[in-house]
Length: 243
Image (cartoon, rainbow, N blue to C red; front, side):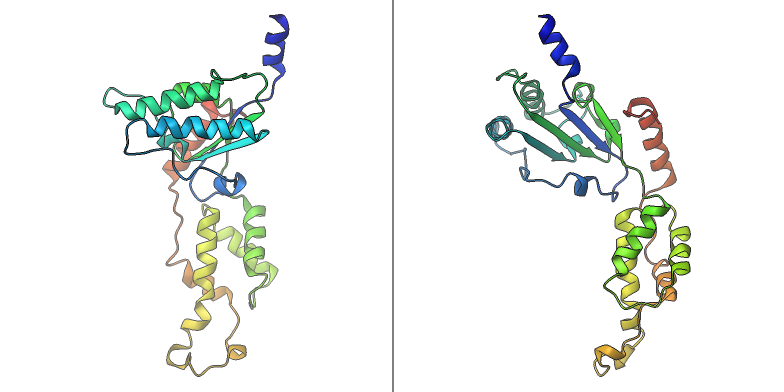
């Protein structure tokens, strides 16, 4: 008994939650083979899919089960909840606990990602013991992202221009910056107007800083300050680091 308790104390976490605003790369960080869906319109099919998922994971362990938008299946319980949803949730939690197999021998990691950690059921949070906040990209990350997006493009931007872009894109997510760069890359083509068809590729001007300024009138940050504040507050209360 003492050995079992000690093993549980020193064992690595079997549940990890990545949470934060959309577009910050949570899914990219955890990219893996995954089941396309765990829900079904047929009664009992959802539970069967969950059992199958965990069975396959145990047969091929060590394994990582990644569930994107985990809040969609482990949302906080309510009186109006559909019975099929409740049964799916119960089956998932049972399988997670390993009640149908030797939990101590399992080498499984359940990795969940969500933009709505506030909606997760408390029973799910107890099992996802590591809760890691993935914030919006900081300046160094934004600089690296701009440099990566432009490395294969013809452009006239200097390092000082990239520094300026980093400054004016405070509050942009990774996906926002990608969309911004894509929009800016169309600037040289749009400037040709009717001459586009007759202009050789090598004569199309490079992307300039002005193209990004124009693109920013179209591509705006997708995450509000209020939403960010809610993530920061939740992270302080429930996040692993506590800050």
